[in-house]
Structures are given as structure tokens and as C-alpha cells.
Length: 240
Ligand SMILES: O=C1O[C@H](COP(=O)(O)O)[C@@H](O)[C@H](O)[C@H]1O
Image 1 (cartoon, rainbow, N blue to C red):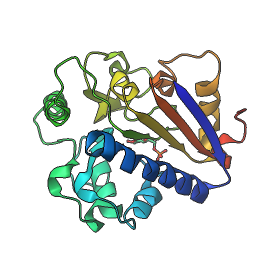
Image 2: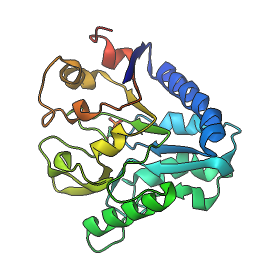
Image 3: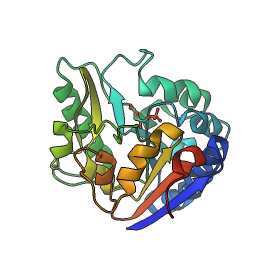
Image 4: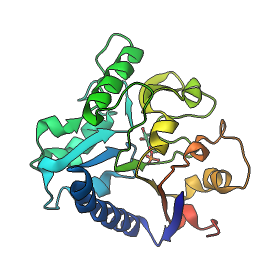
């Protein structure tokens, strides 16, 4: 694994760095595989990044957008990760509707929706059950409890290693999430972490040893490229 950690002066610099990094992956991916696939994170941190992407002239017909996790709510619910990305970015560019691969949230049971999205991804990547296709870029955030995507501490989702998608739980609210082996199969994983409240969790995630069950972001060990982009508020105590 090629792991790089950068501490940027502030959130604007963090967003600018993430933008450059993503843009640097678009053309090579299209040249090698005919398209660029990117999985989005939710939460508050990536919104300005999505706004910045909405201003770029990109080959939108060759860009496919997925989500690494989603709250199990309707697509127009204020908590929807899809809604945030559509408002900030996707509704402002000329991306074909069929290139937007939102997680379904309308099945009677969330586990059915997880299975539907898994099948959809198998078709998209022409992969079979048990294979972990490589998304070009997976964006991740990290909560102050060290969760990433919707892989929360001490939850069953952390034990799922034979699927791409599973159900994640945050207290009583239900979500869908990529599993950690699927994330680890990506060509490139980029964490964006901002804010002083993330320092204690980051210290545990970067510690030589700590529990992966309590600090799920430790499970993210991609085979290829891993970037931790931190702003100074989050990363001030991290030794690079
Ligand atoms: O709940 C979520 O939170 C994490 C971190 O969000 P942030 O607001 O601290 O940036 C995010 O990565 C995840 O996608 C989201 O569902």
C-alpha cells in the first residue's frame, strides 16, 4: 500500500488539495478503463469539494458517481447524502442520469436495498459474487468516533467480508454502506478530515495498535493508494 498523509493549513486548502488529487485521476482512469468511477462520502466535510467540482469542465459522460454510504431515507430527505451531492454538484453539471448510481432506499427492508445495490454494482463492473471490483477513487470522511462510510464502532457491518454492500447502523438510524474489503479494493482511497473534534479519534487510528472494532477507520488499508488529507485543526498532533 502506498500511504500518504498531508496536513493542510485549513479547510480551504484541504478542499483544494482533494480537488487537484481527484482531477489528476480522471484522465488516466479514462485512458486505462474508458471511464472514471468515484464513490462519494456524505457528512459536512466534502460539500465545498463538490461545489468546486461543479465548476470544472470535465468529460461528464465518462464519469460515474457512486456513494460509499447512504442514510436510509428518501432521496429528498435533508439527511440524504445523495441530495447533498446533487445540490452541491451533480444537478449543476451535464452528467447523464445513468452515470449517477445512487443507493436505493425504497425497499421494504434495508437488506434488500443493499442486495439491489450490490447487484447493480456487479453489472456496472461486470464482476461476479465474491469479487471486489476496484473503484478509481473512493472519498471517505471520518466521524469523531472514528467511523468511516457507515462502518460504526461495535456494529455487525464491521464483520461483513463477503459482500460489497451491507446495512450499517448508527444508534437507531439505518444506513447502507460499502464494506471495508470493497473499500480496500479501490485504486485510490482519499480520506478528508477536518476539525479539532477529530483529533482524539485520529490519534487512535494512527496509533501502532488499537482496536479496529472501536476505531473502524483502522480497517481501511487499501492494496493500492491511500491518502489522508487533514486540515491543521484535525491533524496538528499527527506525526508524519
Ligand atoms: O455520517 C457520516 O459522517 C461521516 C463523516 O462526516 P463529517 O460530517 O464529519 O465529514 C461521513 O464520511 C459519512 O459519509 C456520513 O454518512
